[in-house]
Length: 241
Image 1: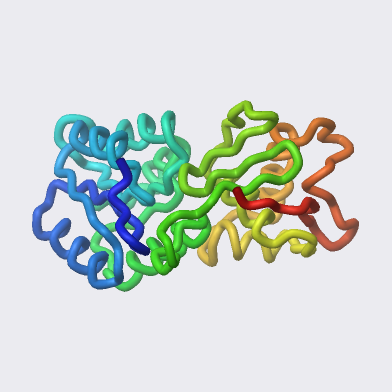
Image 2: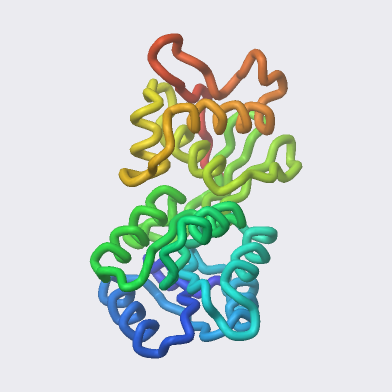
């Protein structure tokens, strides 16, 4: 059961420090979100499965099951945005977190204003805005594709397409902006975010992966087209169920 009420998206905060989790909860609720709290790994997995939150803020160091494993298990079942929280500064930890499925990574101590901005950006990229009028975003049909933004799930010919988090976010961005050409630099800024350190090659790789999963003939794409010398665009009329 999703606990969203009215226009409010739900954020699951997984943090064993009561002072930190209380502060995050206060700021989330002040900004108009519902908030769920878990202080250990098993409880986090239980709430993630039962409540289907819109976003997860996940501490790395947790009792029971550590945050990396919690992230891995959630990602195996859902494409919900996950932002990792950690006191570690080792770049290896950041890389491992992203590899197991995290969408973003915030190092403690962090400014609450920055964390709230990252929450908002992650929800915006996933299509789950806290200011939605109904709290429900209808599935979108385009040809033989269906995108369900509430579940972050994509099906092709009624068969679920397993997408990595950034593959889904890239597709959802294109679907919301059909017929517009975006350069690689624009896509990096809009989908990966202002602080992403990767190059434009990242965009090409993700576009190739997406085509392999959603196109009948990836070499002659129907949806995700190349505008030579300019970038990429998405073609297809969307129908909302």
